[in-house]
Length: 131
Image (tube, rainbow, N blue to C red; front, side, top):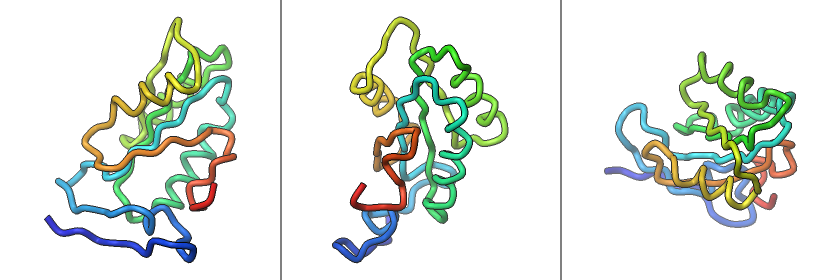
């Protein structure tokens, strides 16, 4: 297995430079991004577009963990997932909370070697190593 290594330190400007990127089986994500969601329907598509741009060249997946949002967040994630196999949704009914949503999402990656969590609203920026 070969590994591409990025620059680690204050000059690093992308997620790809912060993690070792092993070459895995074709189609397997290297990075799983867990996104806890509640009433985030309008933010889902823009977030996935930002992830796609920030993680260009890295096999990734996003697991949106929705706490049964009444605004249809899970339906929006599933709509996007129909055309993008990197997008998955876990809809939690009867369970709520940021920490438990992150833990549940981290327990369900496909075969990625690296995982991170971020907020849907964009306060955690995927291209910013200090956020």
